[in-house]
Length: 369
Image (cartoon, rainbow, N blue to C red; front, side, top):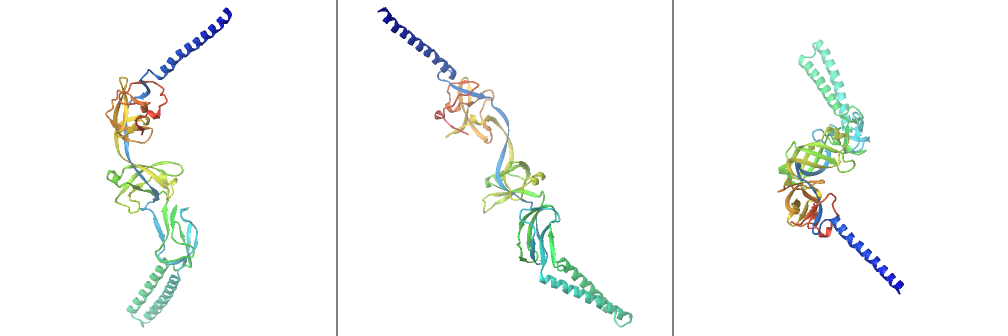
């Protein structure tokens, strides 16, 4: 009897011991999360720093209109060889095109040569007659003038390219062939553009900005640019011109930026660019991005005052990067709540700690910026 009574009693004691151990573990877990009714948060002190107002712009690198040129000839002709392609980099003196002289130009050259030969002979005969007193001084002067006119006409035809059956158009300097306006076998008129050419390191950024931003832009403002594709090497240029009329195709104001000399070694004509035009400097509170929230009332953050979260309405002035610039009635002596803000309402009791607990997005009162 005594033996059967002892076993159930021993089992009951063991069960009570296990329950007692569990009851002691629960308070430890609660203590790790903070006192009951408080939200565990992390904080940082707000500081003021200088930010920059910028205007976004987009465009491409193009040949500087002040240095780019169209290569043409003063006479008509026919393209018999094309040695380059649009966009190709060339060296000074490199052959670009081979041109056959126009038949009319060749004919005019030959006529000028014949006229010079005739005028030379007429002057010789007149001078001989004058020595025999068979020609007057007026006739001699007319013969000399005819020779001078024939020489001038021949020189003009040489300038017009009639003196050679073919001629080569060479690159006037190191640069880029920005466009090829003729094709093999094509006949062209005098002064017709054959190629577009931009000297090396003669690029500018042709940009477009929103019309409402035009009033804040002035020539001379610094501009940071980088290529949209490939390596995002940044360049700092200078705003040269801002248009006063909206482009009917892009509906943007045109802006032209002078690029530094080193940009020519990286950029090519036509490269797509993104730019930030720096318009003004301002002072604002620098706070981490995670600290700023947004709801139907606007942007806001929380400061930790006497153990409670205090909502502060702010105006977002610099929305880019991990550190945002905000303006509002912040107290520089009171920390800003960074992690744990999604759990908070104005006036909630909080406990600051070093490591932020995992925030429950279902209890968030606002959306992050």
